Length: 59
Figure 1: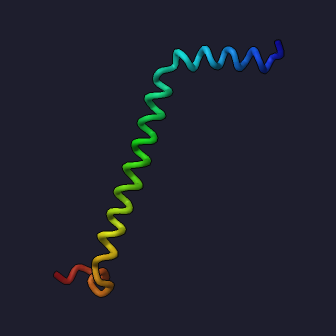
Figure 2 (figure 1 turned 30 degrees about the vertical axis):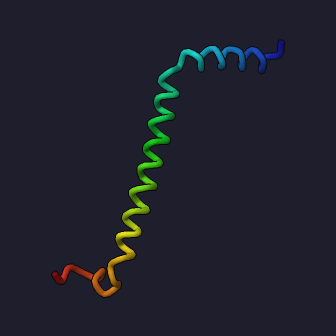
């Protein structure tokens, strides 16, 4: 068994017990999806406003 094989075996054992890594990864993916969805919705809403209305608050 090479040192790398030993390292990978230890790493797999640690990963099996590291449930918080999976929770953090799921949270990170959910946060990224939320950020992308919100930014696209804001971009679509901004595109609907005519250019002359974007310059300042005249209302």
